Image 1: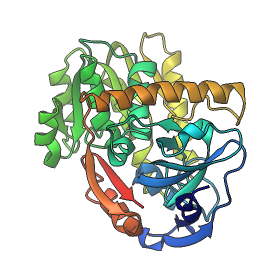
Image 2 (image 1 turned 120 degrees about the vertical axis):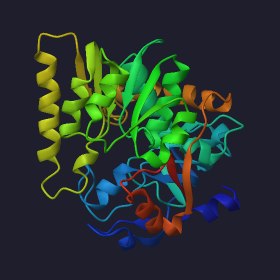
Image 3 (image 1 turned 180 degrees about the vertical axis):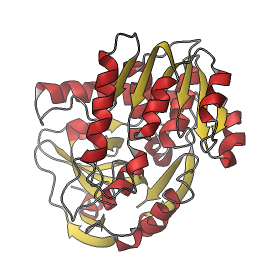
Length: 354
């Protein structure tokens, strides 16, 4: 093991001790063991703030671990050491990983099979904008909704990390994009080719109907709650609704299941109606299965294929990384406050640099 790898074994992690304000996160140092069989030690170059961490600090993310834990849904970094059974060609390579938690650290131990190599020519920060967001956008667009050239889609929160990538992928596929966002981002969104609408417009439904009188082919809704009812009503006769978050419930006080389960029930009910419309909830972890199971291997293969394709689009200039801001990991509190301020209307992804 190299001296650099040995130094990386001492990691600084940002620990979420409980339901606290962003300022309540605390740095903790711990020594990581050498990689075990099948593991790789990754020095983190870039991670990010997302809706998931904002929900977790409130105790409102379904399936989050018990406090205390280290947040961080995804990361990009350099492989510094590998355990027995892992191809040593990974050493020194830049890789990306979905972690759900644990990414807010200077170094992490990960299962090597879960790593996706980042193509040469893409920076760590650029790649980080695409890990969970790019994978989510690509799979919702092509695996769930199966959007085709000439179709029209509606994206709620189109200025966010998922929305900006979804927009570019949709246009690359030849689709038209209508999106809701804060007016401060409308000019930039028009430059991306979006037809923006103020998400606070009291005549939102009428505004969308004016742009798409017969309804849209697909809606991608991150709000949940009453928003999905509006979104379903915006579909044309054969349209698809893809719900992928319950951001509207972020500041709620009741148990998160009391918001999540009614949403799933509503989507299921719509699918029983005698129509050609379809509604579903997208979860990036769907089908992941247990570690080392056949389902897990299929999940890894699908993730690697889709994320590599999105990385290639970025490398070839057909996608542009949208970075709202960069913060040192030590300033994660300020990054979270920005993410959660002003109606959460940042353009792109907020990056953390360990």
